[in-house]
Amino acid sequence: MTKRVSYVFEADIRGYFNHVSHSWLQRMVRERIADPVILSLIGKWLRAGAMHNGVVIRTEEGTPQGGPISCILANIYLHYALDLWFERKFQRQCRGEAYLVRFVDDFVVSFQHLADVETFQGQFRERFAKFNLELAEEKTRLLLFGRFAAERCARNGRRPETFEFLGFKHVCGVDHGGRFAVIRLPSVKSCRKFLARAHEWLVQHMHWRRRDQQRHLGTMLQGFYQYFRLHHCQKKLDWIRHEVQLQWRRTLRQQSQRHRLHWSYLATREWFKLPLPPRRTLHPTV
Image 1 (cartoon, one colour):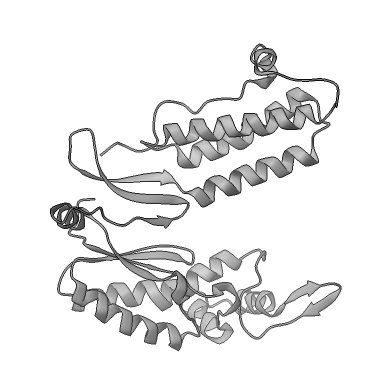
Image 2: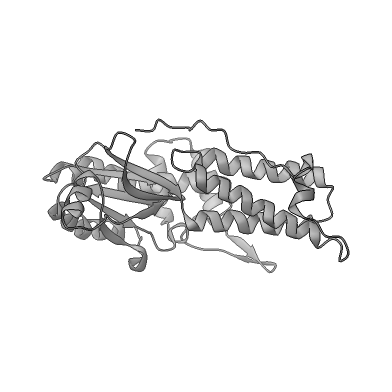
């Protein structure tokens, strides 16, 4: 929001957890851990494999998804394969500003100059090939985004592109003072996944007591609110709450073919009221 950013490189790693090199990962772990017992235990986790239809499938690469330390090992791998390389080598040769933001295997890179983007794309692919990783080209793209990109697009009568990262849709906008701001909204994919999960739970627990259903749905909503409770998200959170209420109403009506439940009846029942998110946001509205 405050840096000199004009381009955002959005990338996706193809089958990341299935292509982590065991030899490289063990070398990386040995950089910080010398205890042979811990190193042996990590090796056993990597070689444990997975059971499918009663058959144990062992692999020579990848971290078992669902394993107790898979996310930690995945973070370690990209820390050495990507983070340190970007910070200590590539960033120093850039003509302008460049920043990397990563969470496990999801990351975006922002640049000031297009020349740095082109250099990064070539070196980045070579770096990943060295560590047995590959980009999903269909999910990788370069877009105009940021304070300077917004000004450039405004002069041409266009709007900057948007991208999704960690469940949020990032949009170039303005704050209450008319200054540039990155507006983050719950993405369509995040909303659909949450509503699908709520619907699946209602179908499986349609015969629970209504107060117990309300308590569980309220807990699910509070978890959704807690993550997406940012400025500009209030309308979307209210819409999610309304959609969950509609799903709940449909489930209640399926319990009996004779009984009809109308909003006028449900609105007077305490057990049908789902909690609203607090009006305060989790982050300052800058």
